Image (tube, rainbow, N blue to C red; front, side, top):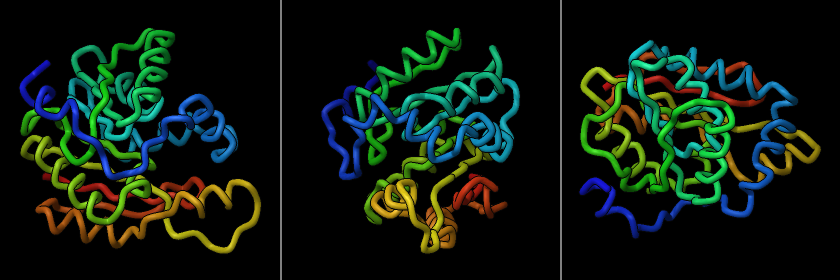
Length: 214
């Protein structure tokens, strides 16, 4: 372990951690996105403007689908890491990466204290994770994202927007887990010193994105 990893190994997050959900998380994602998860993750990779050779961190990586897609884009000259507070998610992410023949470094960690040195990454991704965090923890997470970004690096935050009055199982889950106002994310990233360069709808469900630069 590095010194940063040793210091943060026993810390606990104040955000929601999906322990039991890990075993059926991919099924829920497939249902919510109606089988378009590959398209959704590909869209995120495009929005992040990933390039060959870049170093990437996926914060709240879950079962690793986005991190694996990012690794395919940055290629063997790049490097991708994924961090999640749920050991169960990390175990599934590692299994998925091995099955795909893709090398991604997945590890357990919390968003309030990311286990990486300052200025480690060209790009930091966060997909459908901010809504699991209380407002104060979102602020801590944003500061940590800013800390681990290299000068000129990019941060892409993707999450559920405020939804309308829809019915059904997915609408119930959406309401239960919450959403994040896109303008709140824009304001937060600007407050920590990032330059917001683009924001809007992802184009799948009620999901929005904000892209910012260090």
